[in-house]
Length: 222
Image (cartoon, rainbow, N blue to C red; front, side, top):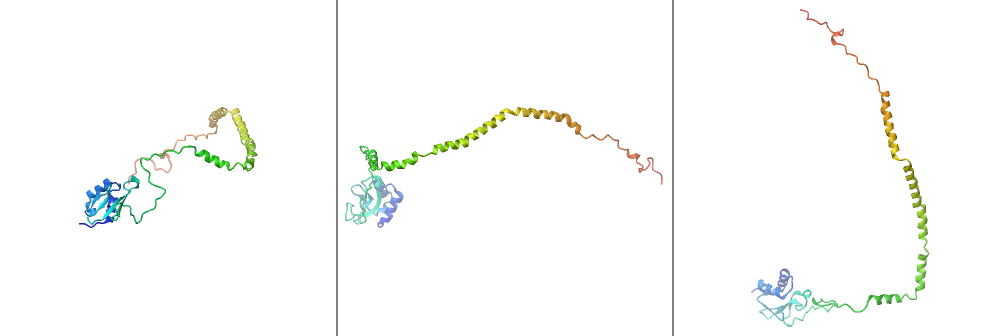
C-alpha cells in the first residue's frame, strides 16, 4: 500500500478540483484512490479521511459554511475528531463571509440630514468670520473691468470690420471684372502694331549657277 502523503493529497485537490465541495472530494477519492492510502471518507459531512492506521484528517475547512469560506486542507484531527483543534488557529476578525441567502435590511431613519446638521451647528458662532471672508467677493469689480475691456477691443474691432465691409459693398467686384474684360479687348486690337515684320521670300540660287561649279556636259576623253 502506498504510504499516505498529506502534501501530495493537498496539491492534487488544488490542481484537479479547484471548487471545494464534499462531492468533489468524493470524486477525487473515487478517481485517484492512491492519494488516500486506502482510507475512507466519513464524518458528519463526509469531509474527513479515516486511514487504516487510525489517523483522521480533516480535508475541508469550514465544510458547513458558505462556498466562499471553504478551503482544501489536510489537518490531522486524530486526537480531536471534531476537527476544532488547530495549532495555527487564527483569531476571529471583524469580517466574516456573508451568507448567500442573507437579506440586508436598510437602516431606518435619516442618516445624512442629522450628520450635516451636526456639522453646521459648530459654525453657529462664526457668522462674523464667514461674512468677513465673503466681503471681498461681494466687492469684486471684475464685471466692470470685463465690460470696459470688451468696449476697447471687441467693439472697436467690430466697427472696423463694418467699415471694411461697407467699402467692399460700394466697390463691387463685378466692376473690376468688366474693366479687366475691356482691357483684354484693347490689348488684342493693338498688339499687331508691335509685331516684327517677316522677311521677304528670297529664292535660293540654283546650285548649277554657282561660278565654282564645273561646266555641265559629257566628260572629256582622257
